[in-house]
Every structure is written in structure tokens, then in C-alpha cells.
Image (cartoon, rainbow, N blue to C red; front, top):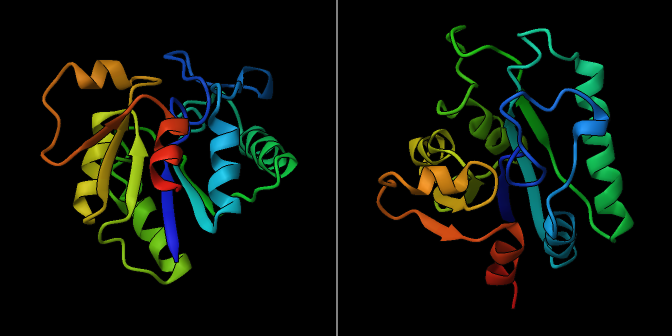
Length: 176
């Protein structure tokens, strides 16, 4: 199985320090949906692992989050692709859960769901927490410059981190 794991906010859709709180605020980044569809059509399974502490903070509810993910799946399907498992952490940063990145719980959940090893699997994110979660389970950390990526790039990156302009560039690298 060719598995690619993506962070959501800042990788697939626009990010906001004020949180993405509604379907109207969920705006795909240029080329991101097409990149997921291209990968899917080429035989890749694309999964998503996303921190969503806005739920714990009361900014939006699970139904709103699910509507965003339904829209994401719909857009990918319109381009002939399919999106795999989407897992989220609904907890706040101080709740001590095992799923919130930089902890690797969501990545382990994806591995268990697909019954695969994560060794060498690319995890694409835009924050230091994404890269640290990848390293914790032997994934290949991949940083995109979208979202908070430029800010992350301004500091030292974990050794071996691959850097791309955006998700479309990741797809172009992975596909012949």
C-alpha cells in the first residue's frame, strides 16, 4: 500500500490563528484538492490527521467538523479521487491526550486502521508539531511552505525533513 498522511489546516485548506470554525471558512488551498485526487487516481491512499482543538474550546462542534470533511471528500471525488481515513484530535493543548500532535496517536490510529507500518511513510505538515509527530513513529517528515510552513522553516528543522512549496509539489514529486 502506498500511503500518504496529511495534516489538514495549512496543507489542504487555508489556516487561521482564529481557527476554521465553519464550512464557509474552510477554503481549499490552490492545487491541494487536485493533488489529492491525482495521488488517489495513481493508487495512493491519502489519509488525514488533524488537531481540532477548536472543538474543546467551543468554537465549533463535531457536526461542523464533519461537514468540512464531507465537503473535502466531495471535492476530491469531483476530480475522480477518493480520500482515505480522516482522524482528528478534539482535545485542547492542556488535556494530556495521546492523539494531539506532536504526539503520534493519530498516526498510530491510521497505521492500525490500514494495518501498515509507518516506517518511511510520508507525513506532510506545516508545523513543528507535525514534523515531531512524524519522527515519533518513524514517518518521513515533510514540510510544505503553505499555512504556517514559512514560519516553521524559519527555525531549525528536524534532520531529514523534506521541504516542498505546497501539496501539489509533493504530488508531483511522488508521481511519475
